[in-house]
Image (cartoon, rainbow, N blue to C red; front, top):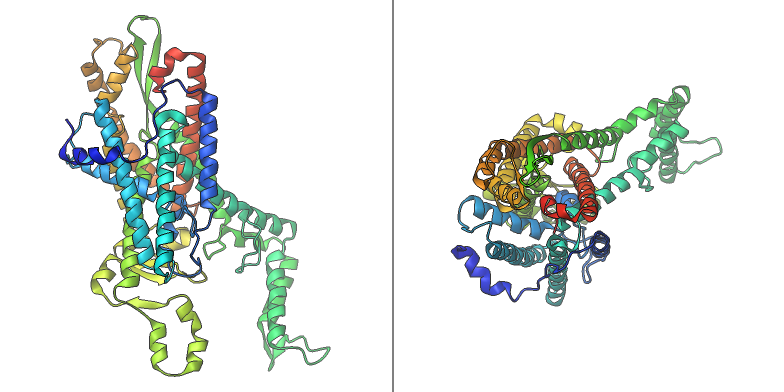
Length: 558
């Protein structure tokens, strides 16, 4: 019998839209078609701006989590998969604390559990949308515009929940959450390699591959561009008074133009010196170290995905037909990382909302008290980037932030608890504060191991569930009696240990990839590679089941 918590949601579930599971066998082509349609809808929503807002106003609370949460600033996908994953996180914590009682083998209890999680995802969408609007994420909005934006975010979030359910119910391939993450991260990685926009910091292409091509084909392009830009800006400030006045010197001292000219001549003599600049471009730009880290992460994940413990099996009726049941090192795949980042994202949102709304004072207000209008004009950037400080000690304990220069409305964690929950991206950040990097690594890996262990009971991957699946498929372990209890005991020797070690391992690998500055973030890169490999296995299993339908039960295909 379901517990009190699940029973409380039972009357509500029937009023929420539901995607029915297919009553027939869905072909591989049809699953592929539905997966493609849902992916296109997601991409359209991720590029459809919210009506009634101005993106240059307000605060970007999800800036550091957008890649993983598959969200886009100022669009219908503002909240991304955050509500769905947060609901799953809540249900996991309730299961782990034994506050939810249910029989995982009972189809009715499982359906009630899934329905409750869907209702929670909707409620989280409503709450996050309201908090986002009220806390000033879009600046000061009138009452009708607040309602309009709230409706857009709620409807888009509900549609995303149903899209995820469509894939989960068997109409598509894999998981909707994984599909959305992979699409978002893949776009970020592609843009980090091939972005043609000229960087304002080194005047090369923002995409690292294009910047590398520029530097190799025209070795001194970096300092040449700096030379040209500096001359242009300097001559705007100090127009030449004569034909021979090139403003290289002022009062006998070399100017920035002269230094750029010297650097340009240096590059003519040593034409490949600029390639070293691409290894660490700074200012959060994609660089060669990040590109190399992404490639290494890809190889490591592909290798680790093949690491497994194999349990020998044979058919009970046909003793000569043998096989193996693989228990992969990444037994719970990328689920632990997604859940941990959902926990961190909610903590970061709450910390930023508290920081900007309770005790925060802009330094621009103090400039206004001086009564000098020239100061207000000269330091207008103080108001533009909302430079200030929070004087509430309790809020400071939870999180402290400084503005992200060059980008309005974004804050960088500077202290407090959330400072240790956000990754130091790139080697310079790690060396600048190794204590933060160490604490982040320990917390992230520990949470991944914990959530991986809890997830096996919730998702039907526990030794008991796998034992029942093998019995139903007509399998047995050679040398043992054909009994679910015996098979469960054999699996119980391996699954819990492999699950915890795999969860910790995936957390360590993701954190190290972030430390190296992998493109699309280390966590995003690891998730994407894992998801692509997972889809490769799903497609292979679907094709195998199409050839031999008798294997559908063993492969767990609906």
